Image (tube, helix red, strand yellow):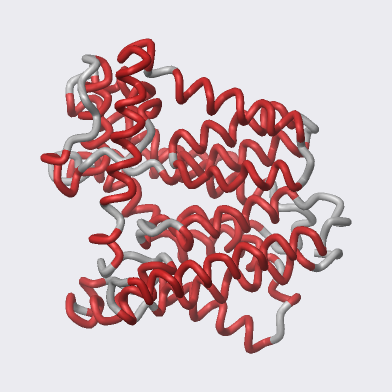
Length: 376
């Protein structure tokens, strides 16, 4: 019976995904269109980073454009279809791996998967609708966790480097590998990343590749400030910018808070160093830092916190009742509020209050608490 139900679920998912693609493919998937255009430019050895692209500038490493170049050779609708269904499959894989890799699991699948999907569903839908790549990043990180479980540090390091090519803020894993003295992982991470940085030279030449890397850095550093005050920004920099306005004071407070958060995570990893299998907790913690530390951390990037949310739900008894209720409240505030239910202006006011960011900081504090405990 369970096998039959599983296949029924798969068929229903495919049908729903097909209907969603037919409805959205012509009007959404804006971020994938950025990837597709960049891939076409890379195939033709054209400049990737152009000011006249406006809001839809390509902000990823040149190697990522090279990676998606084969998709750009397909007709646009076919390319969007491939990416759309790949993204749906990756969302399923993210939830599945978050559950399957969870160490010393204490609760059943129905509770953990059901509540996690309920809390994260809004972000999954938005990710797939935009054609984003955060879910690919998260799946690559969980694949690295699976490699750690098997003692394959070299493969884990390579996968984390691949995640960094997809989203550069995965570079957070490099100092972690150094701190954990996973030297073979550090070596493979460095080798893959250096190779990726040099790969576009085959298309652009060495000087042309350096120009593209400079263009990437310019785009990343100059496009941050205008996005801080956006209503969907859940980063700590966006939080202080919304409260104080974009400026030096907000930037200083954001930097100080980010440093404190990173130090708290480092302390938790050091204090819990005797933990038998810390890799899942560490990956969940570092994934949680990404939307908070990145100045361009949009709310749907919170989908990368799926492993952390599942971990917190599995360890509810570790927290006092008040903390449990605050956890559920913060999850509901982030994942169960919709502008078409609240109305545009109330929803905007809610997001500009940065209550979602405060709730996320509370959740990451709970993960730090678990990681610091030697028996977590």
